[in-house]
Length: 411
Image (tube, rainbow, N blue to C red; front, side, top):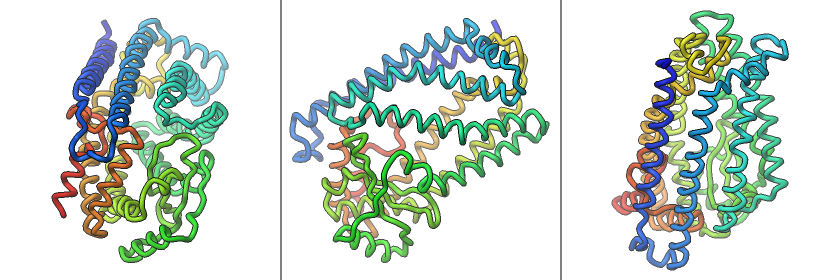
């Protein structure tokens, strides 16, 4: 058997078994007894509902993975990639254009396979637990907008990457790294003003006690405010959230419109202070730099497998090409990506503790931050007792009980 094919099949099966094990352990870790810290926050029915939601989403994830594994393996072994390549080549286009068609067809096929799962998750599971507010019309428009962005932004970016690997020799990986880094940084600036408004409406926060409290706190922290906005998050979900987005004069503070009605001014200020802590502690800059370095490493490694005969043979390809090499490399990179994701999540969880500490120290609103976190968990049906392996592999934030213990330790 082709050694690349053996490795890829092993990665797929081991990855599936690992995720299955984590999901099963997560289900077993669900504790029917409400943690004492949350007494008075949940009533028994609410807590039971949150655990039912975790069970439903976890079991659905197990089902989806169980369907996708044999489909993926079957597609590889039956020469699916070679068939798609034949369709792309039949148009008689240039190598770069053929690569765009090949990638587009694969993405379209993947999207069609994933669509029933997305529809069930959104309109059955999320509906059942009162979280979904997305209409069919909004869902379809979101798909069309996402497709348009993929074509208008992703298409030219991929075309340049393919061109670099075809034309610039051994330095192609460096040019691709610089290109993707520049693209990523530019998107950080323009996304808040050009892309996010395509999906949501952003309305400046009206003058009132909340806006004045935010302005006063920001001024005390020497934080330049460029805009405070309310986003119509309730169009799609009943969840509550808040976030910073953008850089420089495009920086925005954004609240879901579901949040102000459910939290006090002090709770919102404490949560805002947490987000500001990420900026003050340069967490965003550090994570961006780590992503840039990871991207460079990935392109350097990718360059070793461009036009690799053995790799192409593993997928039953009649023709070796740059564009297929990019797709196939993704299978080889999966174990490395998993390890890097674990490390990134570990640093992210540490940064969350630091941001919480900044919020407590700069506002003195420790109890407000705790009560705000509790409300976020209750409304968003968060799992209060995740298994440690679930946290290690998938949590960018520490479990809420661990965060609350750390906050109380600073009081």
